Length: 163
Image 1 (cartoon, rainbow, N blue to C red):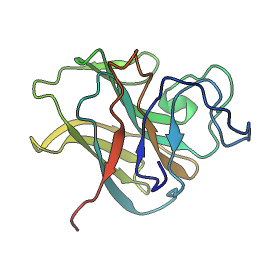
Image 2 (cartoon, rainbow, N blue to C red):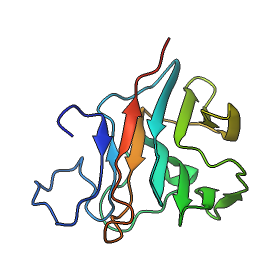
Image 3 (cartoon, one colour):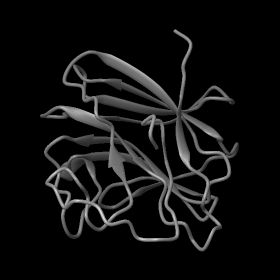
């Protein structure tokens, strides 16, 4: 979006420049701002979505061709598929049982500890935490996933957080 706060997948393919920062085969974006130290937190509205991916990616990740989404490849991603299938993406993925469907996801990152945690904001519940090593500047990662002929057309929206 023009304000840099939301992303959605439309029905039509957009003609955009093929620069090194652009993913060429997946529907996703990285935030402009990256982090290499300190603690950071943001929230994303995912209401009305059947599918989405949220988390972090190293600035240096592969963005061209087939992408393997896992911490080993520089991605720390929580995903939803088909309204009910949640997973922390890896090789293999870690399927998660979530009893209360979140409409807002909180993401907490401690760069110095290599920690990323995902929260169900409304229920005030931890969904999943991963500790590793980022090895590079990381950027918030957002994917609304494909539109699915209008069934998944809602955007993912970065929400303001009271400090």
